[in-house]
Image (cartoon, rainbow, N blue to C red; front, side, top):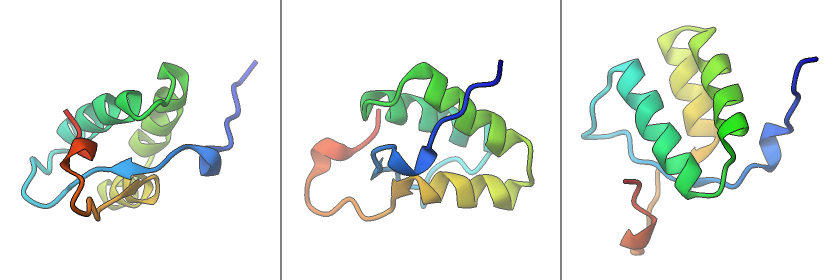
Length: 81
């Protein structure tokens, strides 16, 4: 039985892409760590990762950026890692 999550309800979190490794595998690994830290479950992260890997590199970036924010503001406690 497939699992369905409403990905639009997942909390967004700061996830910088500029100045980071742009390799798709590296992005997904960093995303996983940051998402788990932001309160996502392992299953929720897995759903996003599977969706991201099913498309092109550009689609992966759009998907990741759609669930994160690139504006970290002044609060450095939101940095992933």
